[in-house]
Length: 273
Image 1 (cartoon, one colour):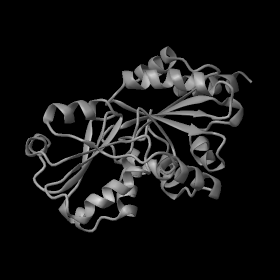
Image 2 (tube, rainbow, N blue to C red):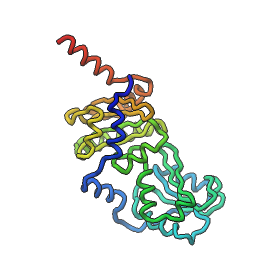
Image 3 (spheres, helix red, strand yellow):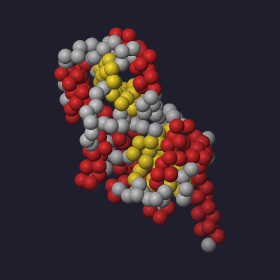
Image 4 (cartoon, rainbow, N blue to C red):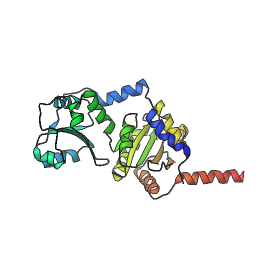
């Protein structure tokens, strides 16, 4: 079934969405926060670097040939702001060669789609706290990434073309259990589908919910979207289980559309009336 003309508005909704002051503050707090000072892990060999990257959903490594350049102090400062990101630093020539680094570079590695994103020489020379923080915020995609105006840029920059959204109120009693099941399912589709959480309790997310023709009374729900052809489907459910999510994703990948069945049933009912 082809995408509806209105589906092109989906990107418009995403890229023109502006958070409320409360949401903006929440985004800032998630990347800031307080606590004991953190230091990047020194990576002195290839095995250590490989293990470090494999152990983190998102890892940022400063590959420096010269530790006296201004970018190094900026890097150390930003480490304090992101508590869900692992930071490492290396000057080891073998480590740099292993990751095809030939100049001072800051790289972000993420497991969800096995991407390595680099800030090269030009970026490094003009880097400051704001620019580096922005780079990390945009590109920090996890096995489950919460939707907001910053992360959506990284989501659509990813090479993974299928996005699955769990639309649910984070304040609901079932949230923790549902997220546990959702995260387990996300690991089954690593590199194939990006898993996203859309908090239906956030007013600004209403446009995303309405795009999928969902009503608040139908939530929680799963919505799946393919960026290449803007094809999409939805599944409303009272309980989010790993098996349910897996079956829904497999069905979409194999061309099964629940939405087509729903629309067919509606047309049949209208004819009968």
